[in-house]
Length: 129
Image 1 (cartoon, rainbow, N blue to C red):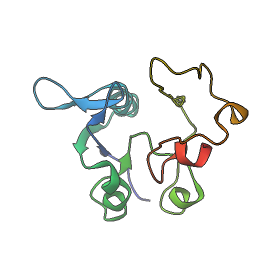
Image 2: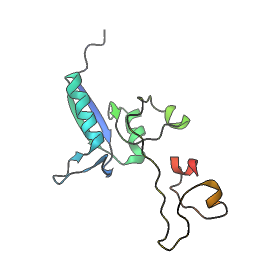
Image 3: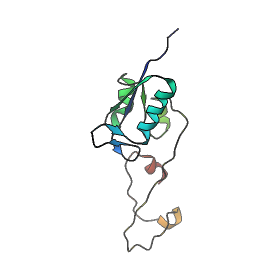
Image 4: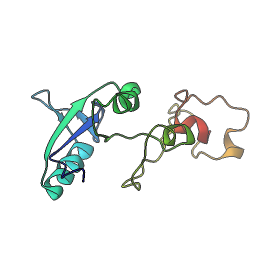
């Protein structure tokens, strides 16, 4: 057999509070880091959490720089081709902002038709819009 795993090397990033960010001592903290540590505790294995740039997480996993990624990676056909995913354990709703003096009070296709909407390129929010 393969034997029992003795450590899980988690990869995350540090710029998405409250899910993962650097604490006052420079170490990664946040909800996802807490979940990673709880998984290790439950499995009774050692745990490391290593910080990488978000856009390099899946490549680092593929290069065996870690055993698992714990970050808010959208589950898409492209990301599924690179990694297996657990069931979702939280959902983050999209947030939209307008100028204070805007008459737009809600987001719906008929209300934003013909208007410019900015989103992060390649994001789940771009796919939604």
